Amino acid sequence: MTPYITYAVFAFLLGAVVGSFLNVCICRMPSEESVVSPPSHCPKCDYRIRWYDNIPIVSYLLLGGKCRSCGAPISLQYPLVELLNGLLSLALFFKFFPRPLFEEGAPVQFLFTGLFYFSVLFVFCSALVVVTFIDLEHQIIPDRITLPGIVLGFIVSFFIPQLGWLNSLIGIVAGGGSLLLIAWIYQVVAKKDGMGGGDVKLLAMMGAFLGWKPILFIIFVSSLLGSVIGITLMLIRKKDSTLAIPFGPFLAGAAVLYVFYGRRIINWYMTMGS
Image 1 (tube, rainbow, N blue to C red):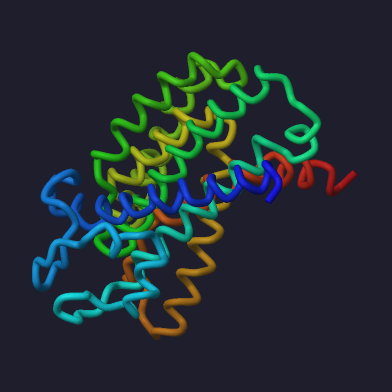
Image 2: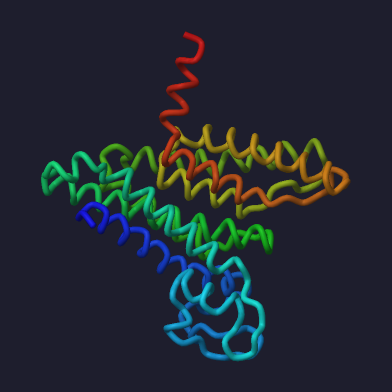
């Protein structure tokens, strides 16, 4: 393999390995358990999972999706999270280390800058993976993800000239404030709560990492996706408008879309009528 392909494979493996830890967070955070101890174990028989049974994606396939000790089925969520995080890591590698520049001998400063941006957005996207799967199953977004995320996003903004601390700060206020306003309007009109505080903190975290300008894009795209999927599910399940659908995954999906294609989409939209 060429050096570029080798690094790309490493980026995928890094994401998959971290994805294995994300699975621990997804399973334990809703119940306020420690994500460090005890070590990974089967939730049914408490069998301590050995390292060779904890290889991302591969172990699931070799075990046939079952616990080695008791034969209990292992949720498909585990390899799915590992694969998803691996693909996100790979996509970030391609974004910040384009092959032509990499193979033509890019300056050391370019490589270090790319590594820094890769690391920041890798943490951001990994947090969104955790939020998505927890919200889908439990309809909660843990403060243990969003509150430290807001602080971290604001801190790294001091080291990203394109972002800047003021842009990040406005993003935090605009992100959280806009959803608070929407939630208040919905409560006044519908006479019931329609959005949790977790969504507000999540969008504030997105504003911290991305700044205030992407907030409108994220709200619009997530609302569009949520409306289409929500209406479709209600028609399929023949439920009324009281069907509860977590909004966090749509916010996360819109944020990831912005990270990779947001500016292209906005430029395409702005030039569509010209």
